[in-house]
Length: 380
Image 1 (cartoon, rainbow, N blue to C red):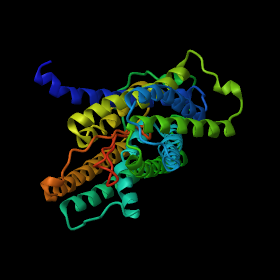
Image 2 (spheres, rainbow, N blue to C red):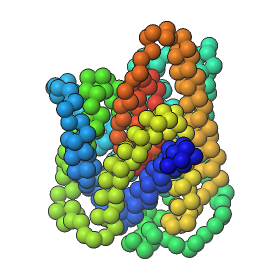
Image 3 (cartoon, helix red, strand yellow):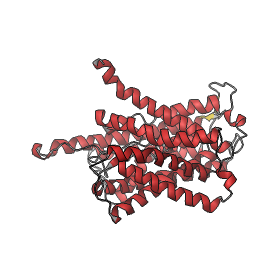
């Protein structure tokens, strides 16, 4: 393999990751439209993810696992709750009330929300006098402003193209009317923002857990297993009719198996390789690509209407995301330059599974808990 192809592989893989997560989001929407209970979808997703990750962790972490203590299990429980069962239920509910494009746009608020949470827990310093600190504040404000425009301003409808293909209609009808009312839009925004808060808390818990249990594949498998238990218990409390749990050879089986195996399994291998090759900042810059892909897919195949407010809000959120990431990179570069050469050691990369949203990326030990990068809320 020549150098040109080898150097292009990280870019190709990251485009494939975003495309795969976008397909997962569309299948999410189709599965809900088919009438499947959303809580059952989440339960099956983590069951499939566990079935995929447990054998992978068994072979890849063989002989190098740390001791599993009660404190580690407690972190696993919290990680599965905030990054798994709770985050996915909030994201899927938000998407069902709005659209795949809207939910993906709100999901890009993750880094800004995590920055605010890190400040609240005193895990991050504001450093308003530095260029990086100012950039993170400005980026956070841009993201919040974009989310408010996305929520409260609809604007004119943009008729860019139409294929007259409506997979939602063909799969059994819409979850709601094509034109969502203001109440659904507002509630979907609140739930989407709550999902970002849950994702931010997950990053903080993951940072703590990686210190005491650095076996990333095993921790991911344990997290998926614990999330599946939580999601199944929660789903059983709300839906006890076993007929609703039945899977056939239809979009339901395709949706839950794809999101579990591909969105929560295969993508982690591709993302981990890209992080090792180019670092987490390289991976994070691809996260807004899913918003573009979902906007195209939603209008082409789901007959979702694209409005000016969604475009303006999405652009502001993406700009805020890049400004926050740029500010974080400036601070990391400055801290590296100030550190004595003898104290800079090569740190092993620890990869965490992206399950909170379609825009989640793994983290390195040197990157956490100070800030976060966003890459799938969601698939998500």
